[in-house]
Image (cartoon, rainbow, N blue to C red; front, side, top):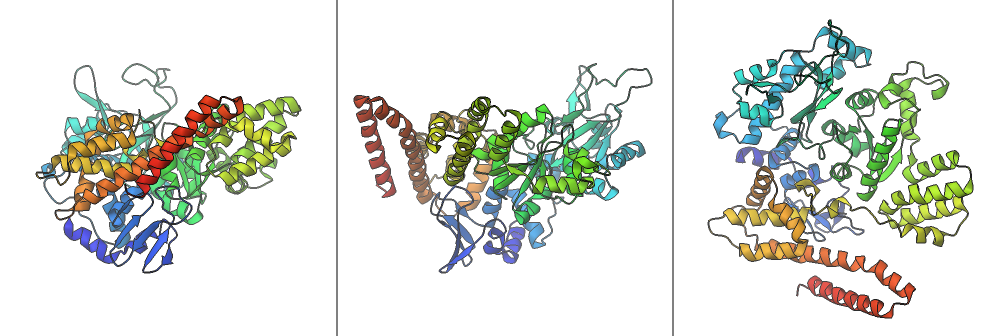
Length: 589
């Protein structure tokens, strides 16, 4: 493995890798950019071609090409290794070594890849006919590795067991379930299968569409083994590799186009995504059986700051678009909406043969192209829809307060927010101050960098939190720790808060192992984490105190407006103490 790592480093420079994700500019002997891992106005992210490393002086992240790809793509080390090996043209032989010598995650990846091959070879003529009727070309079916799970109870299980996989591995991968008799049966039956991959292109799960959907010979609709009518779509359950809230279907194929076009298009289902790619929009991604989350937004933001929502035009799709927009806005993304004709989803629109008057006489692919290119900013879109539906000024005003302002509160850019305030004021015929006052009643949602303390995942954490906790994990297992682990844990707990620290402690062992492995690789046998440990505590403490200081702004303003002198004085004193403490930390005291 070490030989492979060195071969990749010999063929790829840190500048080559980083410049594919962020725009670098020359700064003395190094290159610099605005950090992709935290929001900043002036560049503090530096890349040294000579040392083959990067470092951000704002948030403290740093490392080599592997740690950079891990962080920017949301991958573990082996996933980053795969991505960089493909870029460098260095072959990886995953088959080397006995099965017991490969770790559990490797075995699950191998199992899911074997399953994807199995399903793809089982595609029947009837299933192929259905896919062709839905507009998919043979090349597209092959590219997306679409397959089929048959009606037999345990075809996939039996095939995978013959390949050397255990019952436990089949259950852990989400491919099997145990019946009342204690034996295994296939999780997916009578379904067209869509493999779902991580950012490195490794299969982590599946989505299966029921097929055939017609009644059986008995006149009864096909039932699952529990006697219930099966759902139209069935997704893999949560597994050590598959987390719905962090995986976007098609992201592995879309990320290059997202960077090139500086835009991502979000759709709702597998067919919407595949047909959009087939129509030339390779920057399209889709959610997989869940709402668009803060983790999804963070994943998109690593590639582009622009997102176009193109979800279904029915009521459920509109609500889903609203939830997705708020998550995306809170992450700092610029959000637009591609308005679809009523009753049509993206796949329907793309497949419309003639288009008709609804599409200006254009075919479906051209109509889809126009919808994306003419997408409106989310705030403008909402204002247009409400103004059209509610011509009465009073009703329009109330709707703007109830519907639009919550979205505006999530817009991260102060400049964009001010522009929208001006637009809303003009449409309502009121002052900008009145709109701003009304806006203050709608608190911002937490951004991905302000993850919920009660529900935290590795990918949702700021990079410096991950690296700090990785030091804890690596030093706990070290034979001769280089830091006082107990003291560092207490310092970290104080810096990030009890809830987040307790959630870190409750992370799955597989995620902890990945963090520990990253720290051990970063510091090696000769390096010391002492200076980084001190830096992380200082920066994380500054972040927490700065958040507390910002939270005092509104109460202080309200106390002043209400003439509550005592409360105002108390808040001012608290602000002074926080400001002084932050200043000391900046000075390293």
